Structures are given as structure tokens and as C-alpha cells.
Image (cartoon, rainbow, N blue to C red; front, top):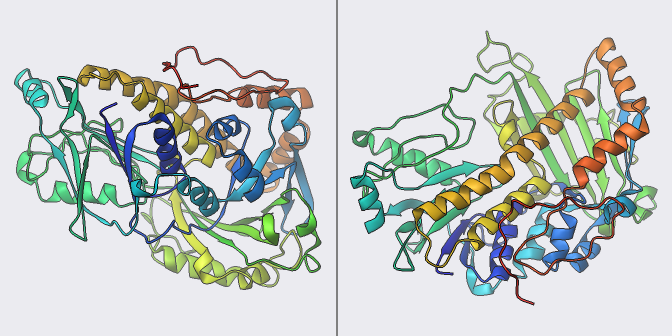
Length: 497
């Protein structure tokens, strides 16, 4: 296949995509501005939806070594009183695999070590991005058609495509220039949303006012309908977001960390060979937190503060004594609130958990109700990478722009509805668990503890019967009692035996 893919930034979606492209024989280059895999603090859950796919990618042994199975999740209040328990003990039988828990850096490191060394470049900080003109684009413009450049973003990835084929060979594309003077050219650009690619497009917009921009609303994703660069003022960018975005109504700050290895005699739950995950909902404050045991006797943790904003304050709130855009100030404030009275459900206090965590292992992220639709769990990021990889791998050797448009139309059709469903389920659960007030607490108790088991199982069966595998790789057996659904609409490419 003649296509070359540039991937900027390392996170769950981008490294998974790189591994899939490597196994499929697609040319790619992975660029990371740090000198090693970024140490983004925090843990991640992997559920049966993606575990057969990860086995396809030869990650099974690594997952068994670096992660632990999860059999249940306990939800408690701030007095450590039980609210509910999520029982996951039957997942291996029903869906062929346990849910598992590990850290994000370990997941990314495992995959990067499997990639061809020459295709992974560190210390590559992107300074500019330029789209490249080609004959087919010029012909399209002469006919009144826009050249194809698509931008999309999720939690971990942002997609920019400017690819054409002439006489069976790829023409046009994207060039990225780095601060060290190096430059790299490909036909597709996929970027981690934290990599700064979005800001580079914004900078290009600011310096190209003479070309005209039709700007839509933004949800911290790139949502510009027409764009230009200095070299090519006629390039266009097509996105799916063009509506005005209202002011945020709620801001969330998530401070995450991973402790050093701890003494199991001090915290006996570290002796368990399954992940002990505990969620704490505090009805008396705007804080909630969770902790989870890891391999090697470490603990992953996260403390979340929610700040409700009023229309009158326009983004400010009396409960916040820092600028709402300042993540470092928010982290300092939340860390100061982790007092000795804030109990850790594994034992001890959250203040002790913070003391056992190196500052380099603590990070803070800011979300609001506008950016929430772009935020998703690791599973959804991996599924995004799968759908994108299948769209790329399925391109014919002599693809033209219409083939590219069709391929990415299928990609978006495959992912949009499922991504929206996953985000909606996450938001509903978040609102349920963080309900305040007597009436909301009563509703939560009924909802969580008195929903019939058959109803719960039916919902889980519907969710986890979706266990897709890459259609360009050798399939792996699936022994779950609940058979995986067939994705008949997905394009196929014969895999190599």
C-alpha cells in the first residue's frame, strides 16, 4: 500500500493505531515530543470489548504480566459506608475475558517496544503543519469541489487527512516541521489531542486572515470549516462540528497519581491477586475519589472536584479560589484538600496516599460539560484506532479521492453511534453516582441496588457482545457464552496466514 501515515503524540489510541498499521504492513512514523513514553499518571480499565482485539495484537502475555483482573467494584460514601457493588466475577465465562486494570504509561510502553525502532522518533516537537497541493486537488477545485482534509478528535486522537492518488501512487499530503529543523511528510496525519496540533491549526488561522475562515463553535476540538496556510491559501478543512457552543455549566478537575511500591503489611488488600477498585462519593463536598491496587503493590488513585458554574458568573465560581483555566493551581488546591479526614477505602487516608506518590507521578486534567463529548475511556480509544486502521488498510492500491471519502465515511459510521452511546452511558453514571440531596440519594440507592439482575445482565450482554477483531489479522478464538455480534458492514481484507 502506498499510503504513509504520520502519527503525532503517544497515548492509548495513537500507539494502538501504530501497532495495527505495523502488523498490516502500512508505512507510518510515530513522533513524540518527549524523550520517552509520556508518564501520564493514572490507571485504565480494559473490558471484554477490546480484549480479543488486544490478543490479536499479541499483547496477551504482556497484559497478564502488567495488569490484574477485576472481579468487582465497590462504591462507598465518605464515611466508608457501602452504597453498592458491581459484580464482574462472571465476565470471563460470559464474555471470554476478565476486565483488567493497569496504568496508561505501562500500556503505551508495552506497545512502543513492539514497534520497529526506526519508526518511532522521540524529541520531535511539532512547530508547523502544511498541507501539500496535488494535481487531483487542483482538478477538483476547477470543478468547484473542495479538496479532502478531515479533522476529528476524541480523548486520544485527532485526525487530519489530505491524501490523493495519481496513477497508483500517493500524491499530496501533509508535512510537519519540528523545532529541531527536521521535517516529515505523509499522506495522513493522526495526532494525540494533547500534542498541540489543534493549536498549530489555530496559529495558521490567525496568520491567514486574508483567505477567509468560516468558524463554528468549539468543544475543545477543531471545528473550523475552512482553513488556509501561507503556502496554500485554498486548502479546506471539513469537520463535523459547526454549531455554537454554550458556556460551560460544570467544570471537573481530575488529579491522578500512582504510588510507589507499598508494604502489603500496611495495606493488606495489596496481597490480593485481583485489582481492588473502590469509588468514594462524598455527599458533603464537591469531591469524589477512587483508588485501585496494581501489580507490584502500587496504588492508582484519582480525586475529582466538580464546580458548578452559574450563567451570571460566566465561568467563575466563589468555590474556586484559582482561575478556572489554571490546572496547576487546581491541582495544588485539591492536593491541599486531601486531609487526614479524607479516608482511603483501602486503608489509611488519602493524604498518606499522596505522600507515597512522587510529584512526577501526579497529573491534573480539566474537563467541562462542553469537552466531555470528546473524552472517553481507554476501550473507546482503542476501538477508534481499530476503525481507523481498518479504513486505512482497506484502501485500494490505486485509490482516488472518492475512495478516501467513502473509507472515512465508513469509519465515522462505524464509530459515531457507539462513541455517543458510550459517552452518554458514562455521563448518566457520573450523574447518578454524584447525586446530591436526599431525594437524589434515595433514587441512587433504588437504581443501584434494586434493578433486577436479569435486567442488569441483559444490558451487559448487549454491551459486551460487541467484541470486534481486526479484519486484516488472523482471528483469535472467542469462548464466551454470549457470542460476539457479527459486523457484516465492515469491509474485509484477507489476512496473511
